[in-house]
Length: 528
Image 1 (tube, rainbow, N blue to C red):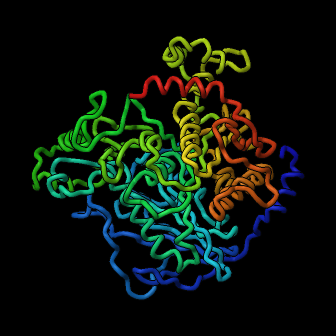
Image 2: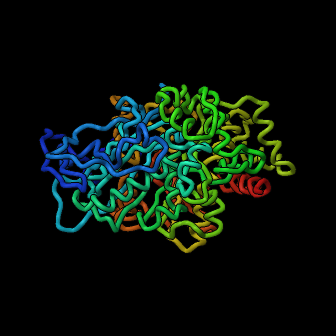
Image 3: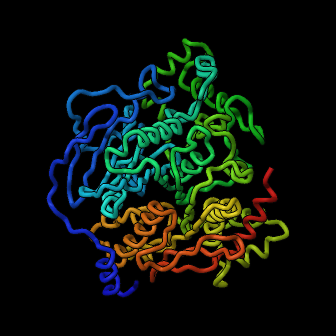
C-alpha cells in the first residue's frame, strides 16, 4: 500500500465513515440505574459508568464493591477519572482526564442502529506497566469497532500501590482474602458488569473477547489463568503482553520470599509503610495506611521512575493469580478459547543500547554467542546498538508471544500469530522501527488521533484493515473474511505469522525464526 491511490481505494472498500453532528442518545437501563449517552457518526457512546463503588477511605485495598444505585438518568457523556498515578510526558497514550482514586468506571460504544441479533462484545484492557494508563486516551476511542458491529467496552482499574499492595495488617483483616491483586479484581468485577449489563447496549454476553496491550495484554493472560475469571469471556487477543517467567525478577509471592530471595509482597508493603512513617502490623497501622494521601501512595512512581523496593506489582497470591503465566500455560491450565497473539518488530527501539550492555546480553548465550551475533547481524553491519534492542525486544515480547502461541496451538485451540512492523509515514527515518504500543492506533483505527495532520491515506488504510481483522476474530473466532489477505492459523511446524508492514499484511513463515529459536533455547536454560 505504498501507492496513495491504492490506499484511498482500500479505505473506500472498507467503508471509512464520514462525520456528522452529535446528539443525545436514548437512555439505557443498567443494574445501577439509567444512563444517557451521545450519538454521533452512527455510534452511540456512554462514558464514565460506575461498575464499582469508589475504592476510597475504608474501601482502599478491598475487593471492589457494588456501586450505589442512582435515581433518575445519569449523564454518561464524559470519561470518568483515570486511576491515580503519576503521568509521564512521553506516554504514547496520554490521559484525557486528571487521575483520581475514584476511578472505577467503564465506557461503552455501540452501533446507533442495530438489528435484533445481539452483537459481539470486545473488552479493552489498557497498558502502562500497572502503574500508568487509563481508558480516556483518544487512541482508545471505540467508535470504529462500533461502526463494524461490535459493542466495545473499556475500563479503568486500580494501579500502582492502590491496585497491587500487600501488608501483614491487610492479611490479618481479611485472612480469607482475596488479597493483594486489587487491580485484577477490578477487571474481574468489570467483566461481571459486562455479563449483567451489556445486553442492554445490544451486546451478547455469550460472545465476549478480551484484548489488551502490554500490561493490558498481561492482564488478558492473567484472566486466562485466573479461576475467578472462568466463563466471563470467550476469546482472547494479546498485543505485546509478554508471558515468560523472568527468573531474575519472578512475581512476588504474597506471604513468602520467592525464588532468588525476592521479598514477599507483604515485606515490600512493609518497606513502603515504613518509608511513609508507619510501623506495626495491627489495625492501627492499617488505618494509618488508609489515611495516607493518594499522592503519598503514588510517591512519584511511574513507568519512567519505577520503585521496586516499595512496589511489588502483580502478586502471586494463589487465588486470583494461581501461578506464573508461562507455568500455567505449560500445564494447560489456561482458558481454552480462540487466541490471537503477537508483538511489534522493535518493541524497545527508543534508542541504541551501549556496547558493554550489548556484550553482556550476547555473552549470556554462552556457546551459542557467535550464532546469536550472526542471527542478529542480518545486514552484516555489526550495528551493536540495534542488535541489542532487537534482542531485548525479542526476549521481552516477541519470543514469549511465539511461545504462548505454540502452547495454545498444542492445546488444540484455534490460534493466530502476528508481527507488527509498520511505521507511520511521518515517522519513517525518525524512529528505528515499529515501537512498543505503536500498533494501538491501527488496531482501533484511530491513527488520525495519534498522528493528526501528518496522517496519510496509507496509515489510515493499515488501521482499517487491522481493525477489520480484530473485529472478525471477535465475531467469529477467526480473523479472516471480507477479501482481506488470508491469515493462516498458527502451528509450530509451519510457524506462519501475519506481518503487518508497509505494503499491507503478508502471511509468511516467521523471518525471525532463527534468532527466536536461540532466545527460546536461552530462556529454557535459565528456567527454574
